[in-house]
Image 1 (tube, rainbow, N blue to C red):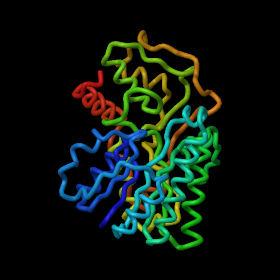
Image 2 (image 1 turned 90 degrees about the vertical axis):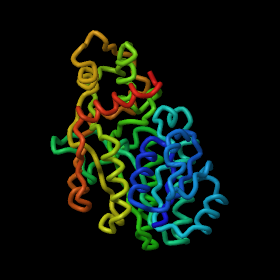
Image 3 (image 1 turned 60 degrees about the horizontal axis):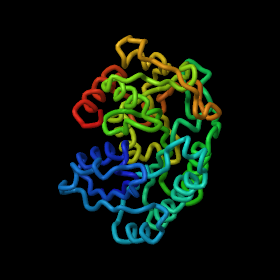
Image 4 (image 1 turned 60 degrees about the vertical axis):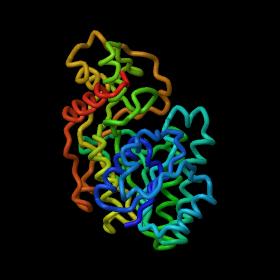
Length: 316
């Protein structure tokens, strides 16, 4: 197939690109490099199926029009977005423009050319988990940050195009994804940050009490889920979760990374406690029922692989 991938130079985007190229599709990538890095796609530069890497924004309607007019895309995997919660609190306009308006521009092109859209949303749209069976797609949502609010708005637009125009679209909500090629600084990559600091002999800083839990999904499993959502018509018009199905507190995660050495753990003041979700635990039953997808990499194995990757780079 001919496939457009927005945000393909990002952390998850890089793994999705790898999977799509391995599956034999012709691939076009667009990324404005605000979050992504060209180095992430460097290894694919000579791949015969990579048609083009375009440095550009999904807010550039003329560029999107040109891409969709010139190439008969079968699927658009739409991963391009502002993803930082704190940035969205400090500057909600940029996040809204990129995540909501940018998605609208993508949808308009997809509608014109009848291209399936796989929209990458986030587990951050959910309210805290209250059931030990985990968060299903029917779980209450709570836009606790402008990032979550912008994603919910975009989700609604994506699904409206399915109902109003019969456009094949799917909203996917992966839980906290980690692994090789994730940035080891800033916000969001708690596993990568912890591993980098461990390897550098530094302390591990935990925001708040550290009792908040996360369901951590290894990136290769996440990419497999993203790609399969594009291949199957069974998920058209649906919202679908993906996660490990196991949550771990940030305190326990730090201990796991440090092999039990609690002397290097330090608690610091939370930068955005109002947008913290206290418990995140995914129920991926729907992904299994519709796509046959389930995670294959355990948390311990994923941490080992990620640590090896960080050690093999110059990130320490």
